[in-house]
Image 1 (spheres, rainbow, N blue to C red):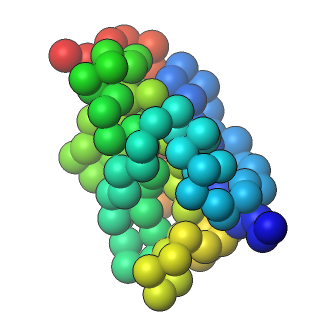
Image 2: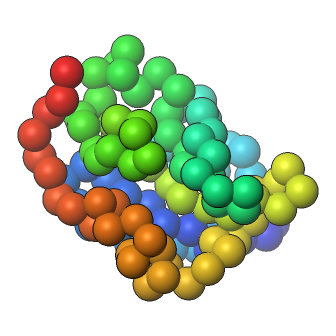
Length: 108
């Protein structure tokens, strides 16, 4: 089993750096559902529950115009495979400052 460096952000919390198993089952468990990927750079994706809005999961944040709900995971991409974050998470904090905003308001 291999692990990848990732960020997890839960609604109402700031992101935290974790090492996750790169298995599909572990990643699905981390978003509590079937994975939807949102590409935000050639080597960076957001993983979220593809049915999160239908399940009425709480609002998490808005990144690159996407209103995300429920738990999200940010990982790297390498040749079509999930991989370690391509940059240090502290750099992501500068690139995606809205990710660190804590917002408990539910969007509709």
